[in-house]
Length: 562
Image 1 (tube, one colour):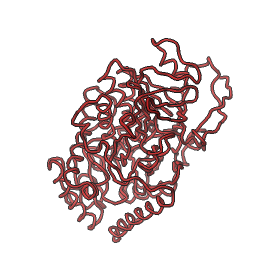
Image 2 (cartoon, rainbow, N blue to C red):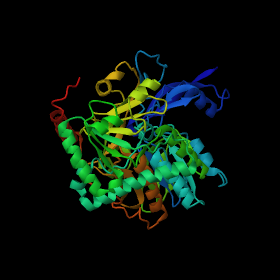
Image 3 (cartoon, rainbow, N blue to C red):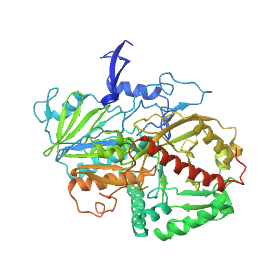
Image 4 (tube, one colour):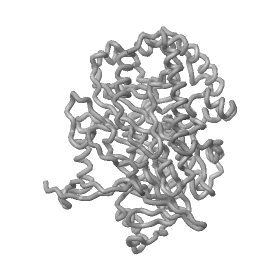
């Protein structure tokens, strides 16, 4: 096939630079055909294994974490997915396996790539609306544009359902679902904030109860959506097991159980002593557990693609590979500048989560949250006998009770994916912790310690991605200056279900609905800003992580670990 060279700009603002790439000569294939062919060859890159054309693939998707950047004019919304990297950036195969060239080993710094082909934007804006704007001209079309991941796609769909006369446009930095919405562990969990103890300490018992009810409502929202729309999300309402390894952790787990059952219906939780816990998960390291039967698991990549389909079916138009250069606000409008055009809008929704501090033109967002990195590894498929010996016949998710916790589940194709255990942070604008060999090695060691009978199983895939963390340790949906700009941050790595309910909440704010959701206390709350500069952030994060790791070390002092 003939190939041509094309120069592409990546990054934005002062970070924008040009790279030379090879593309198919125009006319050889349609863009969709190219994408489909690339999908078959691409190194897997997300938290779930898919069977695609007989080939095992990791899902590539974007958490609530995916970041969406949404703006709209009375009816205009421009949505940008989290600033992205190459879809396979940060994903590696085990060195013992063949590596596809130009994927996991690719070392392109595409952080902050919010650029798109503005030609497509203009074409979509113009359909049935007269002459298209030329380069540099301002658009005033009544368009809503949302984007990228769980939050933005949900807002797009729900807003179209609320207001079918509005046009919704989705602008995505990379493929839909590139960020946390596709890299997460697939836990549709009922956990508000980081931990119930922290939520009660920071917000009080009443707000903690409301938060827990919101989290449970989010799980049901996702489950009902999947069932009603018959989504191919591999959803299983199988429950979650929160496990403890040591006597100290068991003691603390009992306190957590007592607290959480005071915040939510007791039927949603069950405490399991050692024998009962090990009967559910066959590991001698498990000493006790809390069973939460009212939650589920899903394939985040497949789910975000289904949300994309729903948004399109509702009338939204989607544009991937999109870049915004600047955002300026005036008394009468918000001007969003892209590579080839500008859009004047009256309202703007920003749901960029972990990338929010890098949004151009809106200084207030620089200290609303800070990205923390989580990494995962995935084993080769287990045999039927190995799966049976594992226990977990109900296929529930697993979360341990450490301060630096691990999360784990079994995929539908029989692999074990395990992540967490050692959160990493960066400072300033850097977003590059996609490859962390030491963290991946620790995850592999923990897997073999937890399941010694599976010590021979190889690790086939590994990756990482950022989640949004704030000092309040709770989600935040707020306004900037006035109600024209809405933002959403702070999903804390627990956003599979809550980000989608957040999308419904934001749709209510857009429509001006005085609903139960729009009255939830996280809306327009006064969050504690992160410290300015890198030094104070470094000192604070270092102190917190040192304390948490010290607690884990103390509680596990009598365990024999690698």
